[in-house]
Image (cartoon, rainbow, N blue to C red; front, side, top):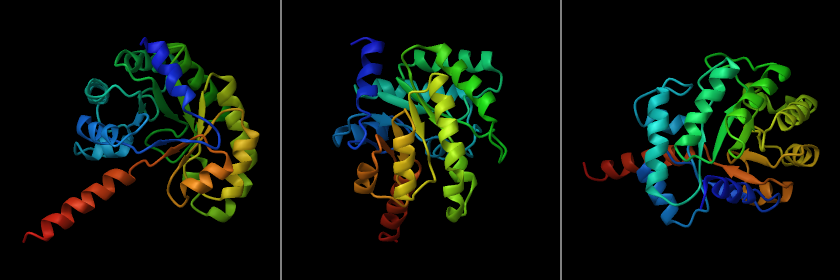
Length: 247
């Protein structure tokens, strides 16, 4: 199967109302475990990849390690793999394109690409982020660009999330026009608002599965469900609890 074939097969998993479930991994070992449990695809989370190696999240882990880790994960399984690429490790569009080309060369068929300015609490303006999404798309015609907005992570007061819907849909439309394939809205947990995004955005919608159930996501029309740092955190808790039974 060619790279293009694998990328198309991964894209086809994104079905509104019948979402692909991505239980996020961080290395080749966790990839093998989730693949062996019957997953249809694999996705890294930037937080667990970083903390498992002693780094903070937010592009603190070196790009070379991220790429090498992607290669090892992809070599460990036949499943399609998408990588949490944060802000692409660059601000300038030409460097973004170069970095994503390198990511595609690892065999990764998708990436998460966020609109937060890494290292700050700010978001890129809509036009600038659309140009950045276009730069990511320019790197590879087939790679699945999961464009992420951090609007709802930035606004912790969930009572204000309804007031962000107009900008959410505007960003989704801009990212779609720039070449995005999916729209990731972590932090939004209100089922009615999620459904509004699914109905109002032309892209398949991805939710973070914190404060929302799979059934709720299905009913809202979600096409992709991610778990982010949750799998790693749960495993570390089990590891510590098991040790405590021994001492």
